[in-house]
Image 1 (tube, rainbow, N blue to C red):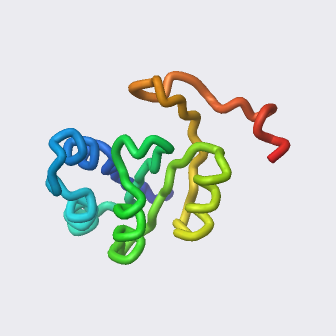
Image 2 (image 1 turned 45 degrees about the vertical axis):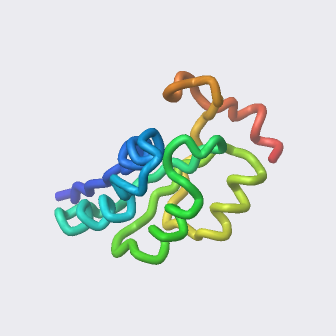
Amino acid sequence: MNSVYLGVNIDHIATLRNVRREKYPDPVHAAGVAEKAGADSITIHLREDRRHILENDLYLLRQTLQTRMNLEIAVSDEMLKIALNAKPESVCFVPEKREELTTEGGLDIKKISSR
């Protein structure tokens, strides 16, 4: 029988914190709670505009996670450099346009395949 794994995305915890311009709710703490509750991995999206997860969150999570990190990033030189430095267990390339509230389209593989 195949196993089922639970990944928890904590982006919106960071979004609330950033909108409030406060230190809470803390996405790093939320990741710990999710892990204690049985999460097998934590997903974060480090956007180029830092709308929710911040670079500092990424590195704090890298130090504290007891499970796997799934890092979602745009295909850009800056994001690739950060991912190579942070060394998450997995990376998911996602389309990103600053004017979108949420992802509305797919990746143009033909355009980015030359990278």
